[in-house]
Image (cartoon, rainbow, N blue to C red):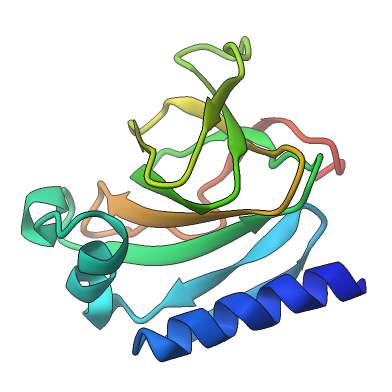
Length: 165
């Protein structure tokens, strides 16, 4: 892992710990950056911190929410993807990121998002998060749509991927 990536992961770890969040999992091995998974019991605290206090009860579709922090590297792209068992809400915490969305496999136009900007992605909506000039930090809440089979990292349908996954 390069020094810049190590530094941003350490910075975000300290930020989350200072805010009182329990980090349930961390993945800094993704070719595009990585993510932190926050304890699901802290979903409301996470929403208070990153989503202007939105009531998590109003977000629940399948009874479960999963808060995460995504870190996307400069000039890196997550896969062009969608999910069968979740919708997502993203809010930019730091940096400027690009996001493409579409209801078809054809990629939509790149839109820039800045700190405090929010986007809601529907179940099945194609999307791609893109790092622009610097590291982007994005808060994410998964809205599980199937209570009996919650979404996980396997619930990613990749339409296109820069890393051959």
